[in-house]
Structures are given as structure tokens and as C-alpha cells.
Length: 234
Image 1 (cartoon, one colour):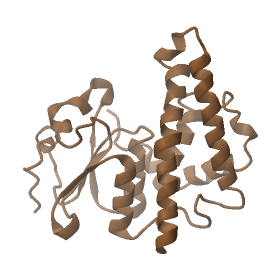
Image 2 (cartoon, helix red, strand yellow):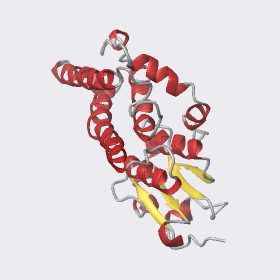
Image 3 (cartoon, one colour):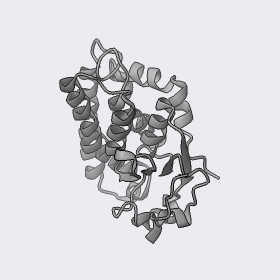
Image 4 (cartoon, one colour):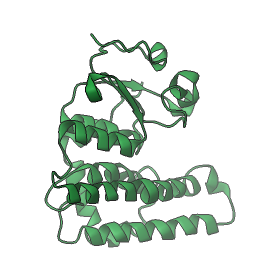
């Protein structure tokens, strides 16, 4: 049986199955990247709910795993060389799990880097911009009388959706015929934008030619449906 006692996070969130990947997360757009990927690959794992609304990601135990205090994070007891590895950052987790399993990433090296490029596109562009729309359209920023900040992020999000829409022209998935980590990285954010953030009309989502059908295809996948609900909230 794997010994995870060297990881302080296991004191607060004990591992019932230490031989499995330990997932510390909440089902936010970033969090579900890891849970969807784990469901898609079939890797055995154990999910632990980290309630960011209660600042649990800023406790000493969580910060010992990710000093940046953001979910998701994982511990894989069977990491490189058979030794445990701890990882944070959703994009890094996707790349690690795809390399570990050989799934959801092209085998061709050039295509693999292209897929990683689109993961970075989501991490650097779509996530931050859509998140700002959420803040200014639904949360505390909604009370700000000056609507220029909201419009700035609406305009940039529309531009990013346009980039994605053009990429999907003639393609079922971001990398073409095969669904992969670029799609997994992006699906939850696009879904959140038009549902939880209530920005469907703001970004003219229904005027897009390819993104809506891509989103429907992704959400129809059973592993995606399961991953969107993991970890289960109490």
C-alpha cells in the first residue's frame, strides 16, 4: 500500500484508498478538467472536496500541495519511477494524465505540441477572460456603475470565442477528428460562460457557427457528465 504520509494535505483530507490518485478539487470550470480527464481515462482515483467558498484552498494543508492556493491538485502515488508525485495547475494535470495513459493526446510529436498549444490558449485566454465576465456580470463587480470593465472582457471573450469557432470549422474537435485534452480543458469554461455566468446573450453565443455544436457533442459524453459533478458537493 502506498504511503502518502509525507504529504501534509492527507492529514486534513485522509486517503481511504492511498493506492489511487488523490484529487483535491471543486467542480468549477478549472476543477472539472481534472475530474473529466480522470473519468475519461478510467484511472482509479479518490476525490476530495475542497470548498473554496470556505477558503479551504488557503489552509496550510492545501498550500503545502499548491502554494498558489488554487484547485485542482492531485497526488499520484504511482508517479514517474513509481514514486509519488504532487501536481497542481489544471493544464499541467491534463498533460501529465495524458502522458501517463497515452490517451487524449496525439501520438505524433508535432500534433501533441499543437494540442498543448490549445490547452495553453484556454489557460491563458479563455479562463481568465471568461472569469472576469463572471465577476462583472454576476458577482461583486455587477454593482460597479462604470460598465467599461465588463465591456472590455465581453469584447475580448467574443474575440476568443471567434478564434475557437474558426478553429472548429470543418472539425468535430479542436484537434480534428479526435477528442482530447484541448477539448477537456475548454468545455467547462464555455459551458460556465453561458449558464452559471449568464452571459449567453452578452457574447452573442448563438451567432457562432461551430462552438455551440462542439459544446453539445462534448457535454453528451458520459464521462463529461460524470466529471462535471465531481467532487460531489454536500
